[in-house]
Length: 287
Image (cartoon, rainbow, N blue to C red; front, top):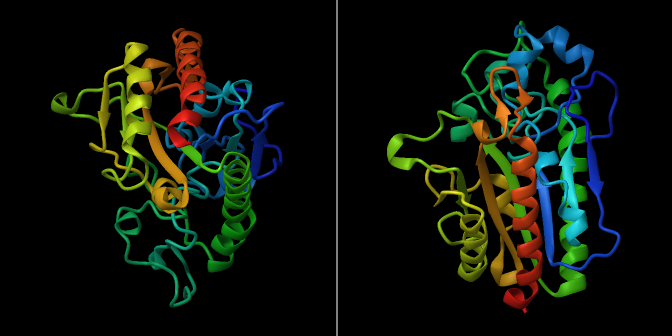
């Protein structure tokens, strides 16, 4: 996988499939897309580097060993700042648009209030993205052309895995800024299961043990309990479990330059061992 951002056209989603599907797991990376269109760059008041700081940069590459462990990896190629796949499809701020938005859009969610709806108004630092207001047709094109294909691919992989094994664990992969946690919350990784509602306790406990075995300090649900993907797809009673994983960015990248650090290969290897270990035990736990 390429570390560099792209200005070329890219399919909205890439699915990396295992040669043999041997584990009841699906991995997703909805925020690591780095295919920036020239039109988006031109419409933004921020330079590309500041736009890129909203990415969960390189998370797709950190989890690239998932197919080797027998599980698919579903990745968005479009940037989070352009369209956020970890939101409801229509969480929109009416103030961003020069024309009226339909009454059925969700304009009152906490994410919209923070400027971080499906079409974000601001980047993670709080700086406004756009020089001018958009038209609702712009948002509609992004949601139908990017959000929907990503979730269609994710649903297909979950359904295929569930059919094959009778159950599925979705691991929703993200990263968090170095300043995201207070000293009281200090951790390398935060696991989220919406406070015990999206994943069987034994599954998330085993994942936590595997991470601790690799030397990671792990917290649960504080301050990240799981976003739309985790909460929407995690339905343990239906045999689909979901857990969100947030990784501290300074462990593997330079946040200012948005570039992998010298620690990146070691971090990737540690996570590959966690993925392999989870693939070995998930089937027995879900059986």
